[in-house]
Amino acid sequence: MIKDIPVAIDENLLRATVKLNTFLFAGVAGFLGGLTLLCLTYLSLLRGLPHPGLYLNLLGVFLPGYSVSPAGAWVGFAWGGLLGAISGAVVYRIYARSIRRQVADYLAGNMPEHALEFAVLKIHGHSLGLALGGMTGTGLLLATNWLVIRGAADESPHAGLLSHYLPGYSVSLPGSVIGAVETFVIAYLVCVLASAIYNRVATRRQKDPGQ
Amino acid sequence: MAAFAKLDVVALAVAMGAVFAIGLFLMTVVLLAKGAPPGVGIGPHLGVLGAYLPGYAVSWGGSIMGALYAWIIGALLGFVWAVLWNLSHYIYIILVVARAHWWRLMAD
Image (cartoon, rainbow over all chains, first blue to last red; front, side, top):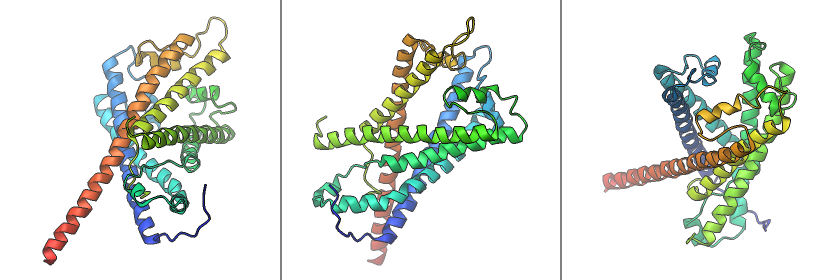
């Protein structure tokens, strides 16, 4: 139960904390993004197949220099790192807009002092959903319209396959808007679900450290 | 507190594993439900995942296998993410404390 008690928060400390966490979140996201693309590329090469990385090669449309090859894998690592870092920073910045309220709620709950020592991060699903949903929706909008601007809309049957999961989506301006909205909703729901599971498991483990 | 509270590694692994598993399962099931014209395979593009996930196919049985694989991949990703997040904060705190000690030594 949230108590409506005014709580003083050190704004400078909060700002510095958000800045630090944005940097760290971007770092982790960038590292994992780059590593994921690197591993997927090398996995495609190792698998051989008639056309190694047939679909992965399509990323070269959006990531100049990327291809399913040993050299391209490292270009992909750089791109994945850069895009992951930017995405991570943006997502955390949007998410952090709710931190002030979360801290105030936590403190107003009058938790015992020692509880802070062993505090485990809880995730605010709504804020994360807004951040990630906005990011992914915007990403789909930009990627689709990049194809349209390049004049490759008719030559992008693979992008059009998204219409299986995003009814109304197509490689066109109106289709990209519909797809962006649907992507936002899906990403939002995924974040709310993931954070609900995480918070429930984390709370249970905090109450019973033996598990 | 909100900055330096650690992420629960197990909880994040479970959450991401669950989300990935449900995601791939639903993606497969949606294609199966939609079906395909006679003579055309269902989900030939999603089926390419079978090259990386042995046993996965766009079929009811394959969707279960895919969910298992996705759970493992999601759990691993969540585990690594939480470990990196916590580790980066620990390193930062160690550096801050070390710097404080250093300046105190210099001041003395």
